[in-house]
Amino acid sequence: MQSFTVSHKYDVSSDVLFDTLTDPAIDRYLVEHIPEVKSRELVETREEGDIVERTVKASLNPTIPGFVRSIVSADMFVWKEVLTGNKKTKTIDMTISPIKMADKFKFTGRIEVKDTPDGGSCRDLVGKVEVLIPIVGKTAEKFMVEELRKNMVLEGNAVAEYLESRK
Image 1 (cartoon, one colour):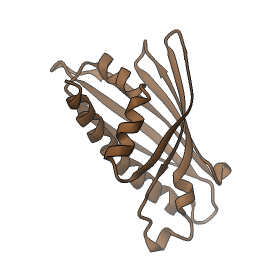
Image 2 (image 1 turned 90 degrees about the vertical axis):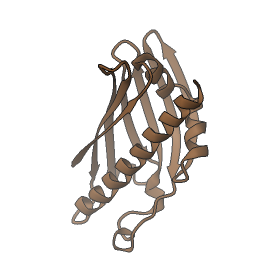
Image 3 (image 1 turned 135 degrees about the vertical axis):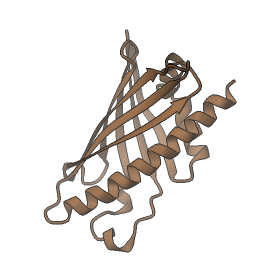
C-alpha cells in the first residue's frame, strides 16, 4: 500500500471552498478544463443534515508507459467515486473503485478543508492506494499514485481557476 498527500491553497474562505468541492457543477468544469479528465458523471446525490454524499462515475485519459501496460490498463482509470462530505468538519471521505478489477484495486482518501491565517483556505488530500496483484502490484501502485497525484494537482489548479471565474 502506498500513501500520498496533495495540498492546494485558495484565496477563498473554507466555507466557499467546501461548498465548491461538494457542488456537482465543479465536475463539469473539471471535464471542460483538464484534458486528462475524460468524464465525470453524477450518478447519485444525497443530502441529510450536515452530510452531503455524491456518487460519480469518472474516467481519465492516462498516458500509460510501455513498461506498465501489462499490469495497468486504461480500464483501471474508469471508476466509481463515493464522496461523503461533512459540512461541520469540512471533510470529504472518498472511496474510489474501478469499474473493472474492483477486487484488485483499493483507494481511500480524505480531503480536509481548512482556513489559513491569511484569510484563504487550503485543501489537503491524504490518499492510500493498494493494488492486490501478486508480484507486480507495487509497480502498479507506484504508477497509479503518480497519476493520481498529478491529476489532483491539475484538479487543484482548475478549482482555483473556477473560483477565480466566480468572483
